[in-house]
Image (cartoon, rainbow, N blue to C red):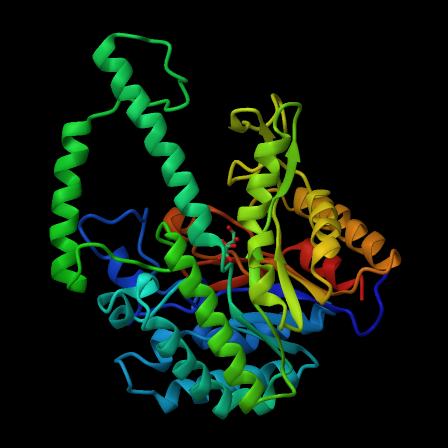
Length: 430
Ligand code: GCO
């Protein structure tokens, strides 16, 4: 199985997860709070900020022809209205390192992290944010737009809504557990497998709010991946549309889109209505905002089974990844086919991958996922590229460095790179 020469076959990263020392970002501040949700701080990450040329060389040597990476807003605009030319020069060097090695750069303008000052001004629930994002986009595209052909405005625009849904489910389970404790009824749904110390949780909540006030000047930090309200979801889409208008004006040759986190949602008997609702919330309601785009970035990792009561646990005995996702590479083809029914532009798989310490399972995952992509293309669906997540083992947000997604392993003590056999495998498809 091989893909056409112009098919974009590559890997993806995000600035905060690989570069190191993203000190002006909201995530960096949160990682260093007493009341942090992070297992460990990102620190030096895998020093991609300084080692990008070597990492891009490893991709090119393996035969890959595309690299999706993000430009870090907190580096470009560390203080509101102050733009750092040295950082633009850095990302220009990264773009040149790609193009000099025959690698197409695919740039993401926002990949979860924001400048700390934006959060102090209300972050992703503030009506001012689309204007700030458009101004940042204008600065970057005026400087670098001439060197780029593909731009993702916002990574996983639907993540905040997904986090809000999970948070709501969790709170409902905790309240049920608490209620059961009060009434002595032990028939709770049992899905909150934990002893709850609500008094301590409430005390922590107040202390955490106090610390957020000290660090950010606000008690509630509306980061991009905080639980998003319906109004906040509109703000994210306004930011995308404002950035799109700027890119159309400043760099009209660029092909642009946003990316969405999409699950292969499978209704089990009795779950049909819930499954439709979940798909509408995760995908369909974004369609009007992306109608004017050139492509949609599809990001998929596994399937979700939905029953009459909502999401179901992974099937008994299923193979699981480090993230506790079901090993289910065929999800990607299912999602592509479902998206293509309603979105008529090009599709780019901007993330698909597996967290595992067994690279032979990564190879099996990639083979199965790509055979699904090829079947879609053979049926006329315009899939233009596949970016494996991730090029490097990296900082998996609140889980820290415990998850290994990379095609390349990194010894963070020495920052030495060790390409895995799966990197060579991916390059063989082009
Ligand atoms: C996401 C982000 C990546 C993650 C990846 C693995 O989709 O959440 O784009 O930053 O690291 O998905 O969870």
